[in-house]
Image (cartoon, rainbow, N blue to C red):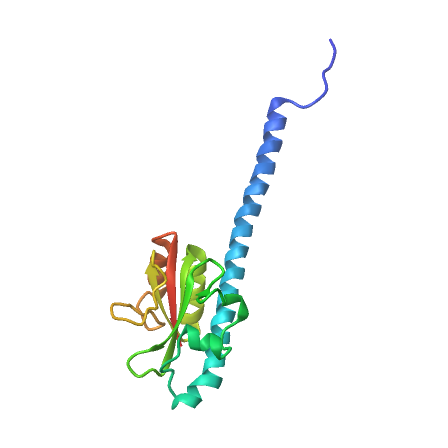
Length: 181
């Protein structure tokens, strides 16, 4: 009897399964890395806008953000160039970016990012809440400016704030996130 050489069907299937597991892990890891990079970029952009507005706009307007919006912020170079679209500010995910004073005293600034994916929404909101700011999430929102009534702001003092943020961000494929600083 001749001895056969080569691989059995079980060997081939096991090899394919191992390769597919590696590919799946790479895809999932790549998605997480993209979410972290996207969230980090947004945090940097918000910090840039807030710092520039606080240094250049706020003191010249009687310690107030009154009158500040996307158009004024762009004209006064308070906005990173990568956000500047044709007449509006646009984030990396295609959503509108709004800049408005927070009523009623205009002493705080609201920067809102529209159409953020679930993972990015959660990471951005959590980063600013941990830093002492406030975040508002409108699940499935349309890029609203988040300065009107009916917006629920979440902060470190909100009971179970992590659960609130997670549930809001995961309830739709995209959400609008407002940051109050």
